[in-house]
Image (cartoon, rainbow over all chains, first blue to last red):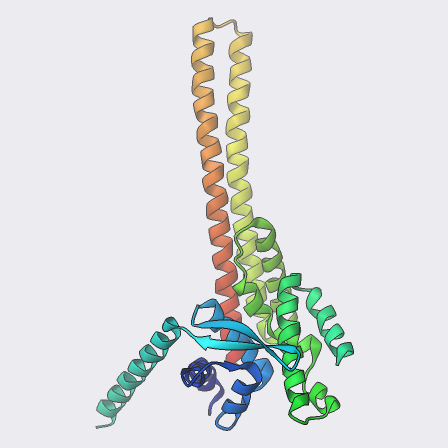
Length: 100
Length: 187
């Protein structure tokens, strides 16, 4: 996937992962890396941006004597996905009209 | 692992507030621990991370995430953003643009402050001239009233100016932060 397109959809992919249930940083990377090139360093600013936009909530869970930070999608995050998918459909429709 | 985390902490402390540093360090600590638990070797894990590069890469996000609602945080954020832009080869032109915008902005504020200060000093001079020229008590009291009204207006202007200054400076940090991110992403 081209870098510019990838940057735009990574936030949506992270939100999509969280639609299935709450998750933590490393698990998100593992789940995403099967489909798209992403590292922990790439994920960090994405999580911060989504958190700042109130699209994610966070909470800590004690795991093997240490804290594991979990991320949970909010209604705003779900709305973001819906809006993105609608836009994507519009793009597809316009593309189909243009190539006819 | 502890040594590397200390190194990361040192790099981050050069740029960010302690609470921001702690957030980033705990994120990487968790990541390293998860990878260790997953059977990876510490040397392999640490070879994937560069403390200085991490500190640089999170600058725009950290600076933009700040509330930036006081002069001290705004000055610090602007300074860090400027430093980041001017030390990243691809973003140097943007850094110069930011420096120019800041210089123009600060010059405007200084001019406005000088105007308000000039107004107050001017009124004080007129007042002393009136006293020296032997004007009547009524005229002097009238002028003091007008002077106090002018002074109140000047204070209101200064208060408004400080709010507008904060608003513009905050938006400049956001704007240039976004521009830097977009430019960085196009790379």
